[in-house]
Image: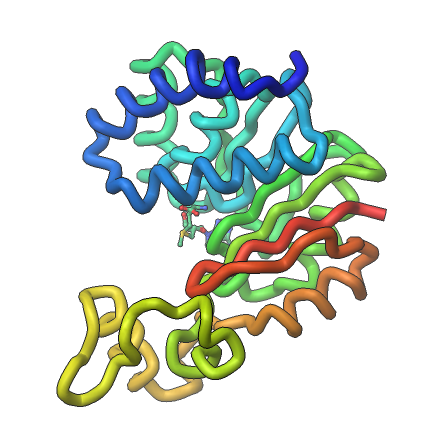
Length: 231
Ligand SMILES: C[S@@+](CC[C@H](N)C(=O)[O-])C[C@H]1O[C@@H](n2cnc3c(N)ncnc32)[C@H](O)[C@@H]1O
């Protein structure tokens, strides 16, 4: 099936909006999913190609991919999230596949198994990002797209991307919203206890290039999106 705005609007988004409403999905989350989907189409993906959603959580992106006609597989290491993803897929009668997989340990899939992959807001959390990218490269077909999103550190990256940050900088007078406060709290933990790493756009681009991905697009803040093509 070739991408046409009509298909996305009529088939996918009406179904997806119903899903988002029943799941209390916020407008912001829906927008994030929409952006990843539209970038896939923009850079040449078309249903029914296969897409791996690495770190799928409770399946928002995987279900959206499946609803728009892709053969979608979501993997995560959290069994509770996978149960919820499978329940949603069954309720929606969406043919998405969900599998338990620790991205740091093993990728079950054969070489060149997937046409494309997404890994949204996950690379900050894995212990072995180099290995994860090696494996994503291995399981993708040559020419396959990889879309990565990363949350930028609101303090560290504000100066580099002033036009991208529309909210005021957090300060002692203005500690910011819940997410900003949670991030500040996480930062106050000692380095040794912190697992999350805030990648900079430059770091992630270097990492991807080292792992034989060509960068096609790298933009946005505080959620930064990188579109890359597997060499
Ligand atoms: C911040 S959430 C992002 C979820 C989803 N991709 C999104 O953009 O909304 C990070 C996800 O990565 C998963 N995750 C983190 N480390 C993982 C690992 N080593 N193996 C598999 N999943 C992992 C978590 O369980 C969680 O679902």
